[in-house]
Length: 229
Image (cartoon, rainbow, N blue to C red; front, side):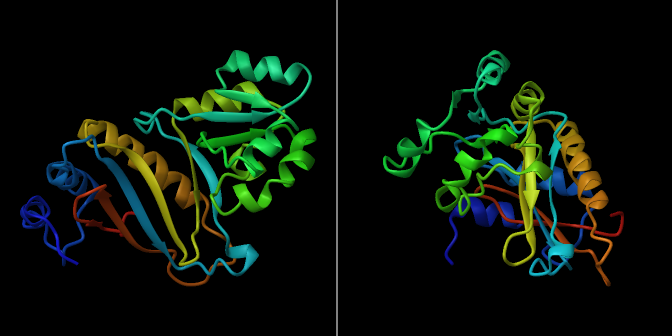
């Protein structure tokens, strides 16, 4: 893969063979984020889990202390009083059955997170084939199936992110923007790693965290030492 001049310049700052302490890795990632837009800083965690086994699945959510730097659009499936509650909490879209054809037939997906009250999961279930592959299906473990709509919307707007294993048993999550200070990124990274540490499946034998890589949208990856975690 051919990289541009900026990428190659940034790559010179980083020793591919070194596993850096988190603070140094964050500093390097910030320095190597040279695009004209505010790049997203992401963490990629390769685990020793085998997600094909239910007891080794990892899925949860964590509120990043400094948010993600992204404005998140929230869709809430609710009825009755919960509609007003969702609107009051600042949900971008609220509805029920009437949203099914809009999403299924018109391909409307102008939202980032879906929250549903438990009594609406029958309705939301009909959208499984659309929302599932996009990782948008509400889930109790992620706190997106709940009667406490206010807390769910507030947490998401405050910077709550969901983490889960992909098919290669890697977790990919954003921890902020290149414009964040190193301290803000460090706090977000620490909050994420604490949550991932607690999510370790008890059934797992062997090494849990195989590698941690920090990267910006357009920049090279920086390896973080797993020793501390």
